[in-house]
Image (cartoon, rainbow, N blue to C red; front, side, top):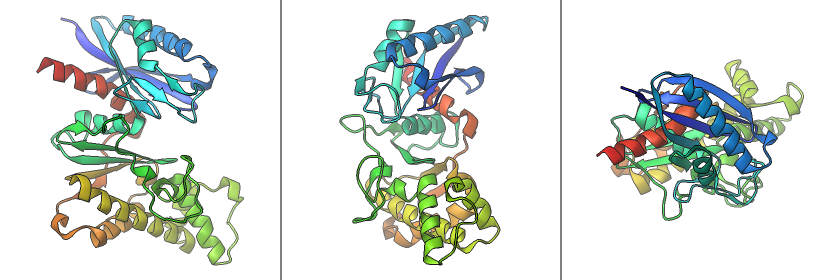
Length: 320
């Protein structure tokens, strides 16, 4: 009897990671491509499809059942990537169609945060949870909303963009979306850097190192050493994130909010102020009903597992 496997593909502006994944979440083989090397999207899909099909042949008894793709601005409904600013292909790109033509297999595509939320539901800590938020705290802030065991896509495929909720009207923090004051300009690796520099300036302190080299990891290390500006930056970030999550809860009433990504690895430095702000701002009827906890996904595997989960989810629904 053949073993069912699927391909999980995570498309990033610099690198595209891929892996072959079994139904238990084991990554059997993996690799990567340099995304900017492929100016033509079909060439990219054909090259990657050929690689994956050849990798499948090296796994005796394996039967490849489809491709799952996580990408910035990926649309599950249309199978397209739409106006992704950091990818080499501009406009609306029918990437699922290209992968299908190149491989002859089913293809599912969505944005990277929604794919990661699916990964948490299929392979992570949300296996028995039907209502949750999955928040990625990386360079920006991504989010996936799961309601009644289903990813919330909205009418056009782009629901759940929490990172682009405006949390500070009149803010001078410019977001990549072109607006000012979005949540991700405060609660992200880039956001906490801006906050740290702000608090240094308010204290008339010079940056400890070349400002160009300051990142969230440096701020974390400074906070662990007791740097007042770094501690204030974490508190401020958590305060804004907690308030935004408390507001979002009123719309979807999740049981759990999972935090994932580089900033989430700061542990109590980010979780404590976030939970404090959340508890202070949550509507009374939700108090004590929502947990904010770390994702259980391994950060190195999450993107591939999340993308693969799209296919496993579709296969299981077809089997019902």
